Length: 162
Image (tube, rainbow, N blue to C red; front, side, top):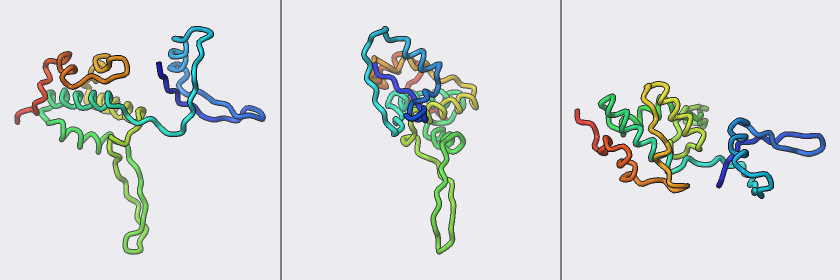
C-alpha cells in the first residue's frame, strides 16, 4: 500500500521535523497499519502528477455533464480549463516593454491535488456529481474505458447531437 502525505519541513529545536498537513486524512491512513508494521518513508519535493485514473474519471465526468447540458466533452474541457483552471503569471519583454500575461496550465500539468480541486470546483459550479471513483480502480491499476462503461452503461462515448 502506498500513501502520500503532504508535509511541511519545520524547525524543531536544533533539528528539523515534519508537520503533517491534512492530519485527519493522515490519521485515517496510518491507522490502517498494525502496531509494529515496518513502513518506508520517501521524501520528495516534487508534486505527484495527476493519475491516469483521474484523467479517465474527468473525461467520463465531462461526458455526463455534456448529457445534461448538450455540450460536447472537448468544448467543456476548454471551457472549464478557462473558468476553473490553474492560472500562472508569465512575465517577459515584448519589444523592450515588460509584460505580464496570465495563462492557464494544461490539465496534464496538474498535480493530484490541483486536479482534485479542479474537478470539485466544476462539481460545485454545475451541481452535477462526479462519478463514483471506486468504479475506476482495480487495486492500483486504472480500468479501461470499456470497463468503466460497463458500470456506466448510459455513457456510449458518442458526443451529444445538436
